[in-house]
Length: 286
Image (cartoon, rainbow, N blue to C red; front, side, top):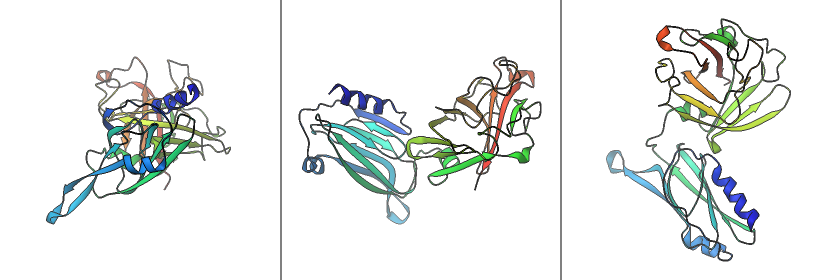
């Protein structure tokens, strides 16, 4: 039993993205549930709205409910995981989405049920999801067209790592490596040139800038593993080919074709008119 509860504690610790208003999370495992109980007690209700011409549109908001089961409830709703019996969550993709409900019994057995919904319109979804992840997942790679795509430059003005950059030609995370951002699980996957795969997660906050007056930044990207060659270069760490790992980046350009990231040095003051930063320049791999 202790192992079962520990397992769900880990699941619950997974970062959930775009979920909102968790209503209740009290669960008890009194026995073993059955598929008959799941069919009777578990529901996914999609919110609707009036569209043009009086047409009813299915929105991206869902109400999840599993009250009364003698089991722990977990919901995988594509862009996040919710553990509990009642919540309102938000999908971030148009079209067909599949929600997977899992019931974990006290004896360790699991039962699952899938619910498929179709989203006609997206409400309150940041366009960053579509830019980073495309229609579900999107591959990014280095952009050598800028010049040097990784290294040191001006936090305010550089459009390449034009101050200094280490040689990453033989680095497995250098040329030929890619990284994929996926909506499902808010997953970040690095595919290195030596065949190695590194998996993590990501989040973004387009209201947060570091420092707060860094006007070139449009928001913060955070990751559980560094992006490709995600190490600092600069005065704080020495001008070496690698410094400390970075997992929080300032987004200085983001559109369908470009992902430019910055990590300013700790003494950077935008009011000075310049500042040293480690910079990364990626492009869509299309």
